[in-house]
Image 1: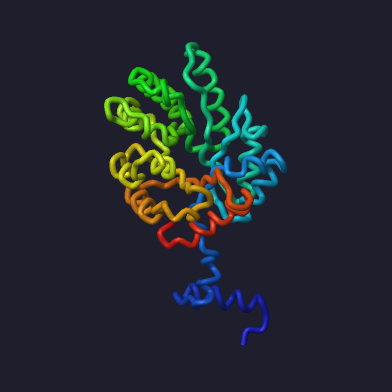
Image 2: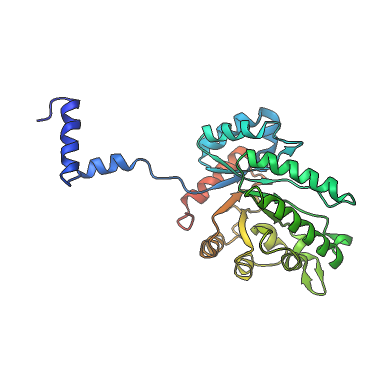
Length: 292
């Protein structure tokens, strides 16, 4: 009989050295099962960030179970008013990671000013440890949806992507529904942006909800552009799974087949409160067997 902790540890070491490991020791050393790789676009909690501050919101999100985050609060070198390195530490200390950011500056007549803005933003997001910098829209809707404008923005995105690549960050574009509803000679603006931007420097973050609202199947677009669509926004009419109209199983299966690693929940319209709906979205996806 093992009489004390020291003798127990000595005996355990001898057993392992001898090539035998008891099942309960195995389970103890294995630790807690790793969380699913579920990300969150913090825009989902934008009002809470304004009301109670980013630190408190991060603590709430960490308790929900999210593991990687996408920001939407960049201005003049700071993210949510914080120094990027300070924000990174706040997130790291809570066991999460900053991996992506939404930010943008539309192309103007002053090219140097545009690129100066992006270069400052790249410096900030590099300090925050971001993998992606995503522009969440463009003027390519309505009268702006011309082939010349698409080509101008394709060149603009490509130049930004070259600049972010120098900091080991990938640049991408996030769609809404208008990139599918607006067509030029029968071709959606979305496709024309893919065709007129650098495949080496511009990726696409497909918002699956807006793609479907635009009249197209997000699964078919994942199949169509397996190399260009590298990140997803997982979205529904309200909280994830609430509408019953989004085939998330098929979306995730195709995304994983394509090698997509990163995706972010975004909740823009609420059934109850932002926090409740964001928490229920996590629970829905965490329970889903098709989500890794």
